[in-house]
Image 1 (cartoon, rainbow, N blue to C red):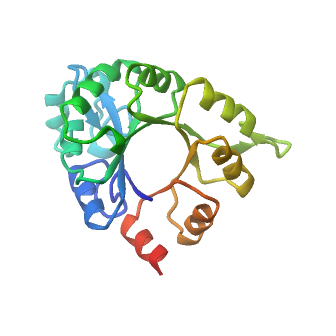
Image 2 (image 1 turned 180 degrees about the horizontal axis):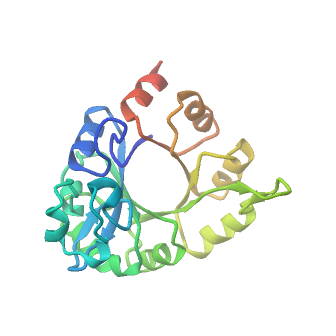
Length: 233
């Protein structure tokens, strides 16, 4: 399963409707977008806490209204607008970039959308957000985001055992891991416990092939079209 990271973000401005529409044209199985709550309660698709990098002018999303963000002209879409791009049978990975305050409007927006619950995956680095979301809306799958690293002694951090404990504690359905330091043993341990195993952000086809050979559930990439083509060869 090939997931378009912030849309086809290598070919169009990230987290915009054109990037998501291009991802679908390139054959992506799913799109991934980042979502935050505005001052006036709208859910918008933007990665950073402010607009400086993508719009050139700094406005803090949580302290701005939707109208103020729109005025920047950088194409920040609402969650509803992003959901409207998703074709039947395709999926969306919703990365929650703020706290649990987003959950009520998130569930309201999803509930009024024609998208099926089975086509939605909520992802976040924040364990508490995923735990609360799962408790309030168990119909939506969740995946905890984690970046493996090694310490000064070469030991993996966090440990696989602690990751599994976290996934069980928050009742997550899977793990989303950064591509670095992943090996077959890590993949096997996650999958053996019945969790999905998603990996981000992979742009090298040879690495994607290796991860898929190890059983990865999905690969998130900036270049969905090129990745689909390369993996089809």
